[in-house]
Image 1 (spheres, rainbow, N blue to C red):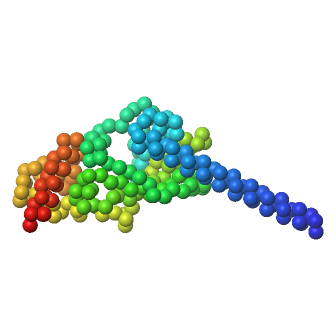
Image 2: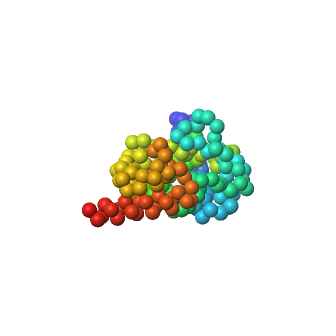
Image 3: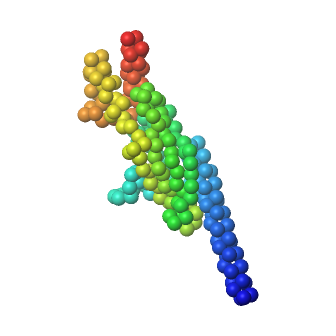
Length: 204
């Protein structure tokens, strides 16, 4: 009887210790992620203290070649210019640690002046950040949740119809074939056009 009792105590103690260890690992990874994300938002190079030298980034799924974020290489491009001019912001409202994937997951909301001017709610995404054996982020997946989002095209429809009457040349330049062409200059021109649209709507 004592043998069974002692075995039960040992097993129970082991389960508790494993649960405590998992909980510590979960909390530590989430805290690391929070520190990383704070540096990422500040735009400092300290973000690399929390990541591998090369981070693989995917959108929606992990099929195909990832976008590479390489230490020492500053992100650029026209979307970066657009986001800066439109004062893009990204925040999370919940985080959790997936032990089976060794990853931090969370729901993130992205907003900017363009969304606000066209009446589009912030974009909601599910993001997954995988950690390697050194507890550094080395893979990221950003999944756009269809049922939680409205498309830009839906919100732009009445604006484009108005713009075709007001200044067809400008809207055809800014939105050829119903496609946004990102750049710093185009972001400024879009803001100017959208402000004129709201002025016309308010004058009705």
